[in-house]
Image (tube, rainbow, N blue to C red; front, side, top):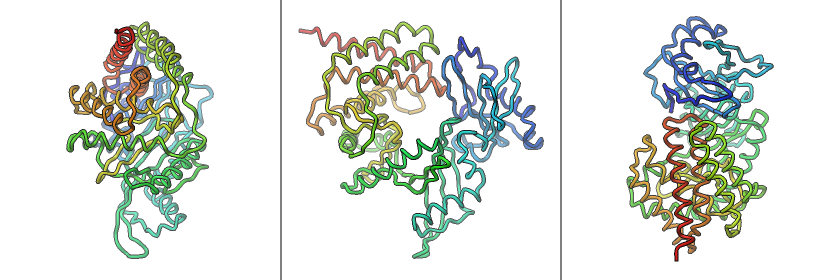
Length: 455
C-alpha cells in the first residue's frame, strides 16, 4: 500500500524532514533534479507516492517512492508503471557512484533510482519483462519443471521494498506444460536480499516444505522455485488463499481458531537445526531497543517506555523456564493464507528456538490490536473476542493452561515491537498506535501485579 502523506518525527539529530520529504515536494524536486533521467519522462510525472520507509531515530531516514505518470494507478499496483526512487538522509560519505545528490530546501539527500539499489543488485534481472521471464524460465528448467512461460502474459507486482534491505515481488504468468500441452497459470514470490540471508532462507524453505509434505496436508510451507544466491535472489511458490481476517469473517471463529492453534502447535515441533536461541536476555534487549527507539520518536512517552522495559527485565528474571521449541517468532494474523482448510505459514526470516508462549502471546496481542487499526476493518470487540478464542483453543489443543505471568510479559514485548515496527516504517497512525500499545502494556503488567497480591 502506498501513501500520499507521511508522518515523520522531528528528530533531535536528523532534524525536521516532514516538509522536505513529503511526496508532493519529492515530485517537484525529482522532476527538476533527476537529470540523468530523460527530460520527457520527468515531465510526464504527475504524482508521487511513498512505498516504504525505514527510520532509525538519531541515525538516518530512508524512504522509497514511486513517481507516476498516471496518478490513477491503483495503490497496490505501483510497479512497474512508475519510476522507483529512494532517498537517504543524511548524506553518507563517500556517496555511491550509482547515487546522485538532490538539494531539498536547505538540505542534501542521496537519491537512487531503480534498478540501482547498490545492495540489491539481483533485482536488476527483473527490471525488464524479458530478463524476468528468462530468469524464471531458467529456474523452471533447472528443476526439470517442464513448463514454458508465455512471455506476453507476465505480470509483476511489487509486494515489499525496503531500500538496501530487501525486495519482494510477485510474478504471475501463463504457460504450457511440455508434457501435456495444457495451459496453466503460475505464481511465484521473488525475494532479493543479501546473499547470506537468502542462503539461510533457502535452507529453511526446503527443509520445512519437505517436512510439511510428510504431514497430513493441513500445514503448507512455500516450496523453493529457484535461487541465485550470488545475486541474493530466492524464489518460492506464491501461496494463494484468504487472509486469516477474511476466513474469520466468513466462518465460525471458534473452529478457525482451533485450526490456528493446531497449526502453531505443529509448527513448534518442526525439526530445524541451527536456529538462534531466543532466551531471556535477547527478549529483554529487544524490549529495551524498542523502548529507546520509540522514546526518541515520541519524547513524551520516554518515562513510561523506560518503566515498561525495566518491568519486563524484572519479571522475566522471575518467570519459570519452558522447554524450547521451534518458534516462528513473528507469528501474527497476516502470516497465514488459508485455502480449503489448509494453512500456509509465510515469512521464515525470524525463526528461533524458545518458549512457545512467545508465539502465542504475539499472535493473541496482534489480534487484539487489530481493533485499533482502521485499515483492518475489525472493531475492537471482535478483535478481543478472536484473541480470547485463540487462547482458549490453544489451551484445549495443547492440554496446557497458558501461564499468565510469562504470557503477560511476552505480550508487552510484542506491543513494544509492534509499535516500533509501525514507527520505523512510518505507517499511517503510528503515533496513536504507539500510545495505545504503551497504555495496553501498562494495563497488562498492572493486572499481573494485582493477581500476584490477590488473596
